[in-house]
Image (cartoon, rainbow, N blue to C red):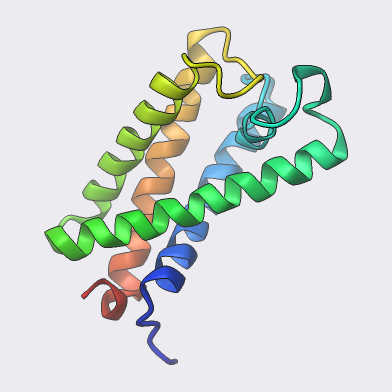
Length: 151
């Protein structure tokens, strides 16, 4: 197997690996009725009104946006690990996921960047857990599979 040495490709793939875990969690919460919106809905809310969040084109736009954000998340975490080292990469990933959540939901949602709103504490907490998962998985993948790119 060839080693990926490119910063963007390695970060993108690690971010997407983390996003798989995040999406599994979020869609499970959604189908259990614990959240009104998934992160795809919230991302679609950047562009469309709340009435149109479940429309197929809105969902596609939201998914593309969500996966793009996950790729950027992976690249930024790779750069953090390059600067700080890969010791405790999983913990650093979880910490970055928490920080990312603070920025996106603590600040971003209070500025109404999305038409999708979280009305109660439970969805907010569950989406925080999903961000801890993307960070942890992304950090682990970067350390395990992309050491050559992190250096």
